[in-house]
Length: 488
Image (tube, rainbow, N blue to C red; front, top):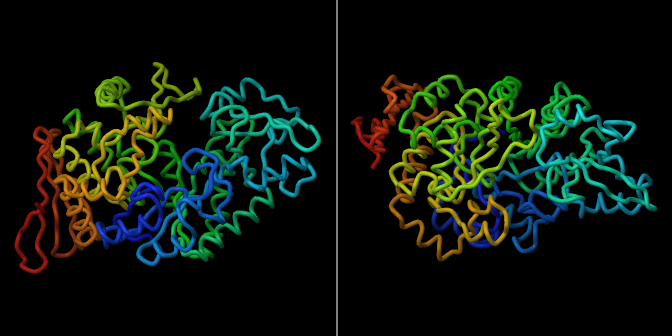
């Protein structure tokens, strides 16, 4: 299959109405035909935590969300994208529970990464630990398996010791057999795109950052891509890394996420200068999925390495913090900047970080949708949602500030807001105007302006933004009349 050059939606199974049936109702009632590119349903599987990203199994849907028939029903209307957490699984999974019970005698024992697989004496060297790109203070957890044997296993993500997110040995034949079954099961249930969550972390090797370790990372990715191709599935690797690393993926034919764009658009609209954004637009690959917001935060390090000034980021962070945003930090000292700069992500809704300014928010979405790539719109962003501070405080999870769950009644109200109606018209235009399948140019203009033009044969459309006023003008040649028109 080929990825459609149309707009996609990102949502949790229960965030637009409460479950999968209500999600389909919302899509067919309020957004019918709008997400022609598909819908990315964030992990709808039974999970022990991390809002679905600690999966217990892929062969069931969380009962409170629905079942696989609901996924098939959604897939009948548009392509469906699901996640495969290739780096880890829940400690509550049947595979790990069998390992806990039977230890080395378990048929699944080789699925999991003990420290001894990397350091045979079981004692990681300090110089090796210092190089690791950490997502928690210590990337290991202690477990008692079998008849009392103590094992230290790799746990890149999660909280506490032991973590509930246990890393998987992707080179194990048992793992490969499981991933084959999962991909085949996805195909049988009409899943068309699979996001490889945390794929950059799957290779652990002494003396490396244990992130995107070459060439081993490509050996695994090429294996799973071959498997996906056989099943008519497209892959979308989720890798937070600098542009040079992303280019390697593009050069090998993979889709990537444009994790640089969200921050640069935010900075452009808040600082009211477009120089850095324009320089980036001229050099970025077009074989990307674009986004402004997602279930995590707006990436900074390591994604923007080479595209930011730490003082500028600190200034912008101060503004975002006053507007209710929070931050996650790089843990590893070696992966911080020399001046100590360590911002990993900025957490908050894009609308709130732009100060609730409808014009600035529409300008941000217009830039996203005019930038070459496959646009993904996060459900909170679709409704121009504000920071859900209560949810973040109640859960203790900072990222919940941008994960509000909308009732059907709330959705009925939110779609009547002018900024939302304006965004829906823009999405429809992006989906249907033929010039977006043509050639894109980034026009010369001052750093207080931005201008992007798409041309296909005799049709063309132009986005012009006056950053001083957040004034957006979208003009196009009308197909029927042959006259210039504008998108109101």
